[in-house]
Image (cartoon, rainbow, N blue to C red; front, side, top):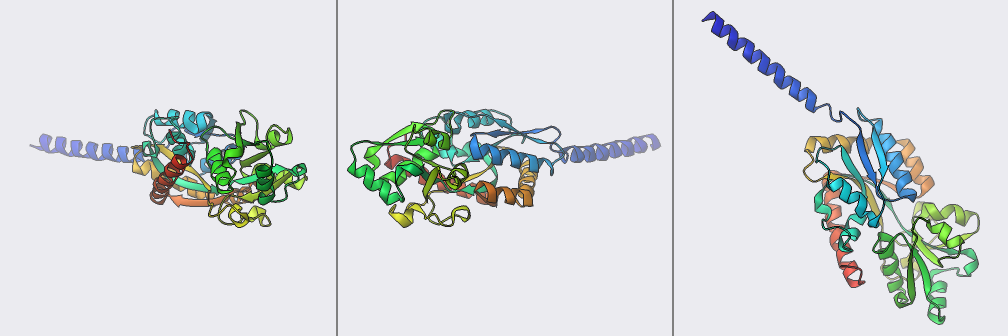
Length: 321
């Protein structure tokens, strides 16, 4: 009897210890580096690398940024979507999840991912060479309407977010039929403009601001409904003839659908701490974006809402497959 009771007590103690060990092991995420897929170069890569470095300070293991570009984001999304839903592969995502899907670059949509947090918001800007002689959006539109040549506009890629934004802008200006879109390939917007391979480009302000300061490029407007802090003297396109145009890009983090809630919570907390850090806010001011944290649930609602708007707009502009 005593032996049986003693055995039961030992078994119970072992069970408690085992349960405690499991809880402790579960709480140790991450137990190895977390890989963050970065979909684009330019400011997206710069911000993504900084975010990864700052998140690493708030996790037991580092977050490693890995560039997987191509297909308007499809290459990177496809990679992360194919990995295990364990939190060790995440993607530095954006509205491109919708543009790539509706363009036909990948068979899945935003529902293939679990949102972690929105990180930032960027408002695209329209830039031209200073020697083009266009002082305003209206000047450019009038010149295009009056001329015989089509305007060559640089974009990140066919069906990309910058393609969608450009098409919407020029459609509002009544010159959509006089535009030729030129993908950059490995080049960047300022390089293509300064080399005169394109006449105009819609890209992130951070790429254009140094060249505007040097006098080589002119930023004519930004595509959101409001002006942005980095370009207080530059009007929104809506202010200068583009009707009710209001297009901005969010960037954030997502993991494969089915990633455990406690893992998402840890990644969200690390992202929040990074976004609220002085270093990240300083980078926002210098590069030209807005630090704009949203938790996973709110971010998920935003993604779904934007997906519907983007799908409708791409359909109207003939960009949807």
